[in-house]
Amino acid sequence: MDKPIGRTRCAIAEGYIPGGSNGPEPQMTSHETACLLNASDRDAQVAITVYFSDRDPAGPYRVTVPARRTRHVRFNDLTEPEPIPRDTDYASVIESDAPIVVQHTRLDSRQAENALLSTIAYTDRE
Image 1 (cartoon, rainbow, N blue to C red):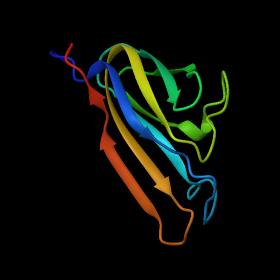
Image 2 (cartoon, helix red, strand yellow):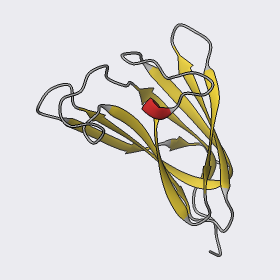
Image 3 (spheres, one colour):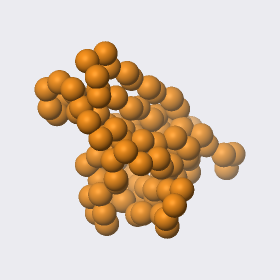
Image 4 (tube, one colour):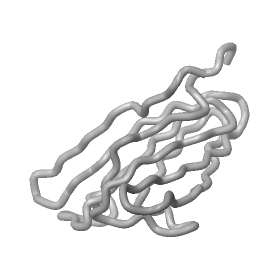
């Protein structure tokens, strides 16, 4: 690719993993996901730091997105250095050593009428 697509730093100001779910697991488990696109020719080393309203940040959580691939990272599955708490507001900053595109998605299946939210993460000019 001649010109990289994406940024190396972005933020998701809204985060919340519902504590309950309705429907078959794991497909319908309530969750938050960062959808990461690495369209570059080298692997992206990604660090996710999670911020809370009433305590110090957690992380960084580290993931690799291979070159010219996508990876969907469920915040529910992040456990090292600690699990992300359920039913708790949070925000996240995602930093990468290669340009990536980040989309945030939430599935809220606490009731039979599910809710799905999705938005592109905020990026500042680099």
